[in-house]
Image (tube, rainbow, N blue to C red; front, side, top):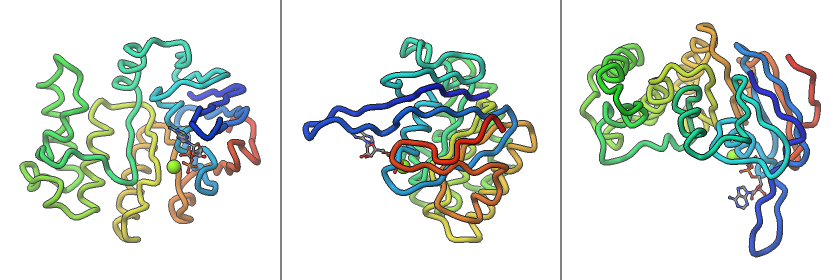
Length: 223
Ligand code: ADP
Ligand code: MG
């Protein structure tokens, strides 16, 4: 599902080059739930952005769902993301002036709005947000906001979910509810890459990858 070979990512800044990733090799099979841990600044979010086609590596190959993400044009990457990848972030990244429903529909492919609407309504019911459809994010609890973000991530039925500290702003009970949704996604065949500092979140994963300073420490073979 995911294969990284010799992946390096260098950010050029005014204060010099920062190697966010330094020769990362990684292989993750379809249907696996993998957690990534490591100190702040070690490259976890950078790794997710490369796997999700949000950024390009400076060197190396990123292959996801048999597609070489590193060789796509920006338009191809955008389409690849819409079709294959859902993202969930610590800060939710909801648009404050849009309703819950419209926040989910921002992920809809052009020309598939009717289909997306039906799917969004179904996700809202499933995530106990059926009575919050017209609310704005500011009128929701943090747990509800993250469920909206999760519904947006799942709108296009992606095969891969990339979650960057999704429980970082949630209390333990709410976090556990969100982790249940992640586990459910995996049970339905999805692949998950979860960045987390939380032991309970990491415990859901079948495999934990430890990173430090742009490298994978105990890089296991394909799991
Ligand atoms: P983590 O998610 O593990 O905290 P990041 O992947 O966000 O780490 O960052 C890894 C390193 O790359 C850090 O040193 C960070 O400052 C740097 N970095 C990340 N994004 C950028 C950027 N857009 N420009 C410059 N440096 C960046
Ligand atoms: Mg990060």
